Image 1 (tube, rainbow, N blue to C red):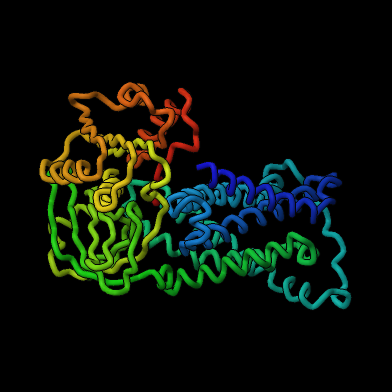
Image 2 (cartoon, rainbow, N blue to C red):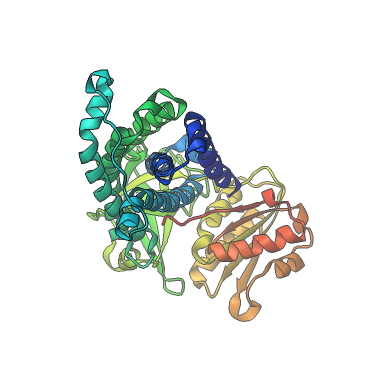
Length: 445
C-alpha cells in the first residue's frame, strides 16, 4: 500500500507544483472572476492529468504494475484516481458555473466584457482554439455528465460486474472528448510552459491508451488459449475447481499469480488466482472460481469439459517467497488459492523453511482439505485448519499465541481486506515490521 500511496501523493503534488510554477500570477488575483479563471484551469489540469494516468493503468502495463507492487495494487490506485478525478471534475464544474449561479441569486453582477484582442496579433493556434472554444465547452460539459454517471456505476458494488465491465469501456471515448476539451481550453500561454509540456505528454499517452482500449488490444501480447479438461464442485465453499490444458501460447507462471479467463462463447473476462504451480512438460493450470457474482454463479451449471478458454496473463507479485526462512501464511475463504499453488511448488522443490499456514474458513470441503493436507505434509508446512465455529475468529492476538516467533516472520495474507487489515494492525502495533506484512488486494472495483 505504501507504494501506491506514495505514487498517488507524488503525482498530485508534482502536477500541482508544475502548474503553480507555470502560473505564478495566481497569487496576485484580487477579484473573484480573476481567481475563478485560475481555479478552472488548475482543477481542469489536475482532473485530466489523473484521467490520463487512469487510462495508462487501464491497459495493464506490466513494468509499471510491478513497480507499484502488482496489478492488484495498480487497480487499487486506479480506483483512488477515479474517485479523485470525479471530485476534481465536480469542483472544476462548480468553479465554471459559479458566476452564473451567483448572478442568478443576485450575489454577483457581471461587468462589461473586456476588449477583445486584435485577431491580427494572435498566433494561428490561438485563433484556431478560439474558434473551437464554444464547441469544446459544450461537448466537455456533456462528457463530464457522462463520466460522472460511469464512475458512479463503477463504484457501486451491487451493480453486476458484466454491466460494470461494459459501461467502464465507455470511459475511453469520453476521455478522448475531454482531451479535445482540455487542449482547446487550456490557457494558450500555458502551452509554452512546464505545465504545457507535461499536459502534452500526459494527453498523448492517455490518447494512445484510450485507442488500445477501444480496439480491444489490452493484454493482446499476453493472451493464449486452452480448454477445460476437468471440473470439480465444492458445495461447502460454493466454489468450482477448473482444470485447464493450455496451448503453446501460455509461457508459464509463478506460484501465486493470477490470470484473466474467458470461457466458451462468453464475452465476459474475469480475474482468477491460479491454484497450481507451473510444469513446462505438462502445460496445465488450475483455477478455483467462487460463486461471488452473477457470472461465477452460473459456471457450475454452464461450464463443461472441452469448453474453450481464453487466458490473459500471468499477472501479480503475490508469489512464493523463497528468501525468508520464517513465514506465516493466512488465507481467508477462497483466499487459499495462491497458497495451494505455493504448497504445490514447495512440495516439488522443498526449502528448509519454517512456515505456519492458517487456513481460515467457516467450513471447507473434505475432498479439498485432503489435497491441501497432503501438499502441506510434502512441503513441510505446519497447517492450522481454523474454523470459526470451533476456534472463534482469528485475531492478531490469537495468531501471536499460536506462533511465538511471529516477530521474526514475514506474514502473507490473502482474503477479505477488512480481515487482513485487522490482523496487520494488531501485529504492527505489537512490534511486527510493517514491511514484513504482505497482502494481495484482489478487488478490481
